[in-house]
Image 1 (cartoon, rainbow, N blue to C red):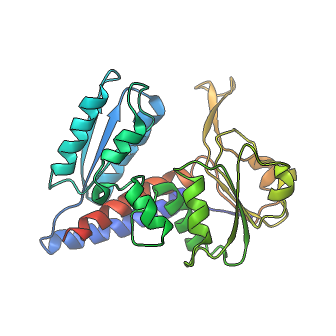
Image 2: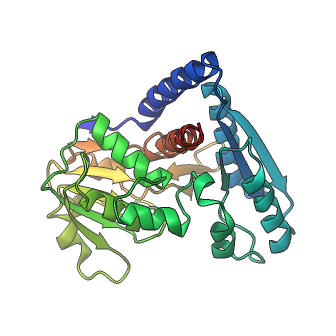
Image 3: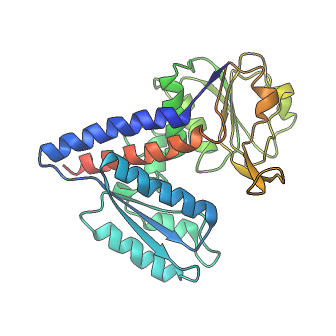
Length: 291
């Protein structure tokens, strides 16, 4: 069994990006600039955004963090987005989700300039991705593809089951893995809450991607020997034996599944770090597109 080490792989990608940025600076070209907007004080979101800022520093990007209060109105947020759309020094930016209930997430995502949409969530980029045209790929699916490629996990002709149909992970990943690409050409089943007898479907899969947000949902009896397991979930599970009172768990029961898997991602340290690395890669691409 081989651990798909997202932390190590993301560090390698960041090193590659840092070299590319250094070469840009030597050539007198623009330094990539990533901005992030966060609304409110959601703990997980703040941790994630701070990690993005640190990653920008590591690779030599400029970064801007716009921290807005919980009671920010939709109109105020849309104004901030318009400012970033028009700021020529900003190459890409993200609006950290989830947003407070008074704000329409879809309206916000639609307001982002597609050329600066390094999260890959705008309908223009989603449409281009679906048609296999050059676009910004959603960072988490992009990170999964990169992890599979760098560990040389074969996908062509393989049976893949993606559990979870979110617009951020499950649905785009199912499209990407079915396309004619280096990490693709798979036969993909997209499973969800209405799927009947899910275990019988996952047991036939060569690759299972668990992205449904339920801690330790996928168990050893649901996978076949030698399967590759990608765990996208991360949930805080109450655990009084831990100093902080909880532990982090993925959507996969690592203990039982790892005994049967040929490749498996850990939680934490698997898909999460890859998401940030691919966000940086998209930002570098956005900057290069403007050269």
